[in-house]
Image (cartoon, rainbow, N blue to C red; front, side):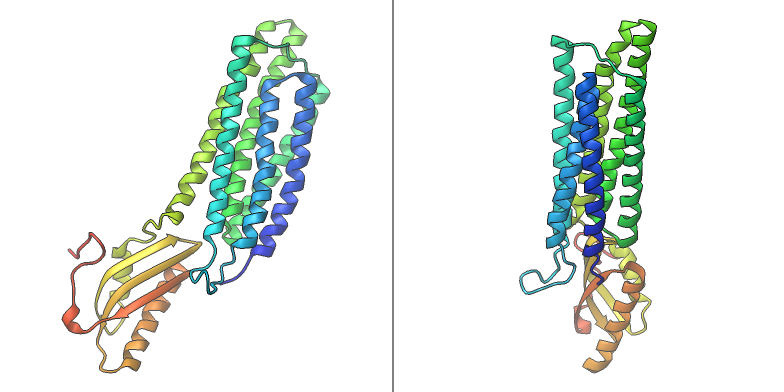
Length: 306
């Protein structure tokens, strides 16, 4: 299996530098203008940078090649890194909601923003868009869960920044048109920002939990159909699979073949492995050959042939 960790590290370093730039700009403009929603957005960008650092750390540990201590490879380290991203998102969501509630009950100084500051935020938005699409495209191309998860997080940052920008435009008009009620846009928009952050974290969690808890990767019926089409296969049962399609899948099964010697049986199992590899690559297959008396209709655990 190809080791793409060097390429993943390159992408993470590039996005880390860009995210740090975005975070600093948002924090400065948020502090100068007194915007709660922009300060919350800057906090969200802090998690972007933290996620990149976490990704660089887990990338060092996530070699796809097995060794003595990890015979199934190290790729679950990437899934653990993705869960770390979900945790960071949850923290950001809590901080945003806490700040909004405090502002409602205790109030704060009015937000003041200029057209120049709005243009700076538009440039920042462009940087966010570049980072999200860059990470997602490379992540999909090389099958890196940490890049795909981080791209989802950055995509949520784009929507957050768009919401905040819309609110700040309204506040800018409030100052220009002398409509003070529009000042509440800053607080009101902090709540949907928090919901977007939470949704992003939930999606990252949902995508990576199946890998960590060894949830079924491929329906046993689909595996059975492919295996039974191989010449020489008489019976296939007790099929199990785990992992995630596109990352790495492990398949186990019991097989009865029409063979009088080990060499013939081995050739049949090689054909089975080749067909499964062609369909579900990357995949590792473990086949247990049994005598005809062990024929079974138990397709998998809790499933039987119709």
